[in-house]
Length: 298
Ligand SMILES: Nc1ncnc2c1ncn2[C@@H]1O[C@H](COP(=O)(O)OP(=O)(O)OP(=O)(O)O)[C@@H](O)[C@H]1O
Ligand SMILES: [Mg+2]
Image 1 (cartoon, rainbow, N blue to C red):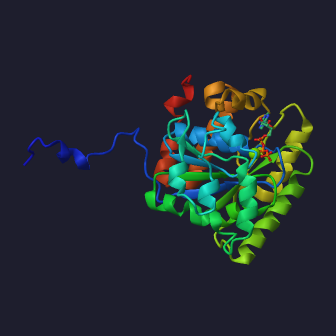
Image 2 (cartoon, rainbow, N blue to C red):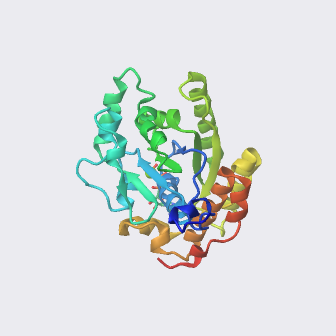
Image 3 (tube, helix red, strand yellow):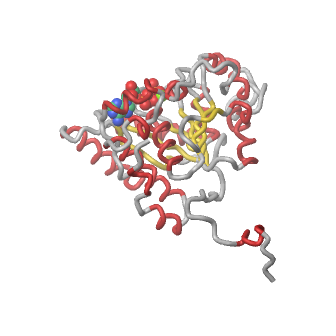
């Protein structure tokens, strides 16, 4: 018998806007040993677009340059960085800051991270320090995805990211030598697999960035990369956009800075494609409809 107890509605379907829990948190390393290809821009803006669609995202800034951190205007926050957790002196859960985008959180980096690299190198478990550091997040299940914004070197921080990640998302700039860079990454993944540090690592996605539709070069590079890497290459291509390079200096993602422009639309499209690759068929159907938030000016 129905007694009017509000708890009696617990079994009712959840409202459509309520975020769905994914089966488990995924750790995605956004990595390419080449500098300036759009790793940080993709980590920040794909993260923001996924958060806009209701996912809970943690961005971990692994780069002593701290570009992802300053993209949110969070540089210089005292004592809040990955440094202490990496050295085993604090839990990562104490170092998580909110960003102005609901659902998107960050563990900042600072210049000390360069020192952490040296100190970690002396530790016996130096390749798995980050994997250990991230463990409490698996227990909490607060986040759907953790993005690791990697530095552009093949140093110990990037090796730690590859050892901790479930998969790799690699941004590639539409320019000459794109394929050569990719060959190096594939070799690196093979080394990680061979070392036994991480048996599940795969190159799950390649995102072409800074695409200039006016040049034959951009078209040619995308065609070449698709020919060799097939479906791993996202259909969505990120256009070259001055707005994308301006947004960080305002502490904003592109979704706040130029919400309805082509770059914001591209990162939203990338987020939809990303989710199609990561969730169940039922949710794919849901996501194939353009979210209402797409037209929202923020
Ligand atoms: N699609 C784009 N259009 C125009 N500029 C872009 C685009 N993507 C990134 N940029 C700019 O290019 C520069 C390099 O981008 P970003 O910092 O994302 O690369 P990165 O791979 O993280 O670099 P690093 O290797 O130094 O960490 C930045 O100034 C950024 O604002
Ligand atoms: Mg970067």
